[in-house]
Figure 1 (cartoon, rainbow, N blue to C red):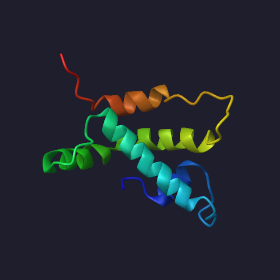
Figure 2: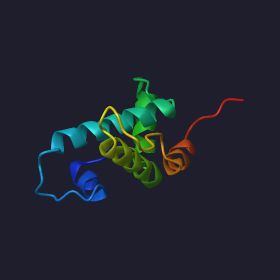
Figure 3: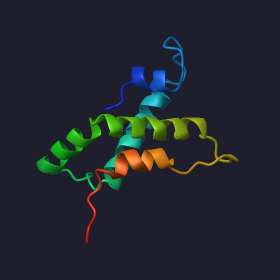
Figure 4: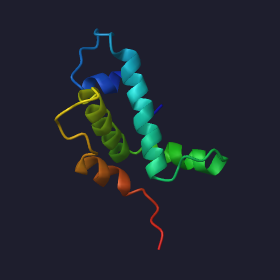
Length: 103
């Protein structure tokens, strides 16, 4: 996983010693990575796709986009929220630069 628990907690301003949401945070990190891989058409299992996915998900811009997505998911985790739960524009700008566009 690209996002470790420590960086997730720092991004969300959660004290390091608060462990109640640890499992959930790790889950959200995995969800964000899987979502980004699908958007970037990197969700295949062949060796070349896996290597490319690992390379792209390690890029600082992509990691920041993943953190933004995790923050949105974490802060809007109830079934009914009155806030905007769509992808942020920043997420799109950081992630989509690596999306292969067909012509």
